[in-house]
Length: 257
Ligand SMILES: Nc1ncnc2c1ncn2[C@@H]1O[C@H](COP(=O)(O)OP(=O)(O)OP(=O)(O)O)[C@@H](O)[C@H]1O
Ligand SMILES: [Mg+2]
Image (tube, rainbow, N blue to C red; front, top):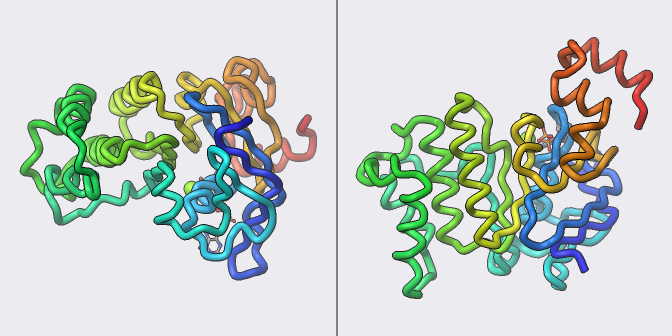
């Protein structure tokens, strides 16, 4: 059975704007899944729907996590099952220091594993150790993403969901963040990431989904997606074309999915 099983969900804004149309997706435990898609495809909406952040959504369909029905549960119930969401804006307490943000990640924990988790985090992101007293809003974009991931790890996620972790980062910093995700996955955490940067995401993902206008239009192993001509052309910037609005319109007329 799938670890996360999403069946035919429909999510609407204001009861009339469809953001997800009958979306179905299965995730296996301990793997890395990437959901790729252009602006407005519904990537953020998907993560927010899973996390329970959109009240009374999904309107239709079901979401099961490790055998528990989680659709339309409040966000604190969803997170208590081990689903941790790192939003696109990182969700840090900007006026608090690095240390204080990490302490908040430990909220509710009384176990002896905290020290080991901190050692793991500082090993992943040594820069955070040098910055413990620094106010988080003064960190660079990359350091803020690292802190957001570090704080998420302290919550011992079983499913870690990340919204565009590479957004706005220089290539080298994005690589550091992605290398860290691989190490987190190796410890047994299941990862669901949404990205516009398909190249980067498919480097580490085992499996990928392409989301367009609220529907999954293609799925496959990362290797299959990398070989798919449409994916190459549209998402991997191969074939000499870039994704301009005009390109999209032309493409939509003849697309193969
Ligand atoms: N709060 C909201 N109210 C109304 N419509 C919304 C709201 N949030 C998103 N939408 C709409 O839902 C659709 C999906 O948006 P979503 O933010 O999920 O896309 P996305 O794939 O994350 O895009 P991006 O790559 O730009 O982050 C879009 O058409 C968007 O305009
Ligand atoms: Mg988004």
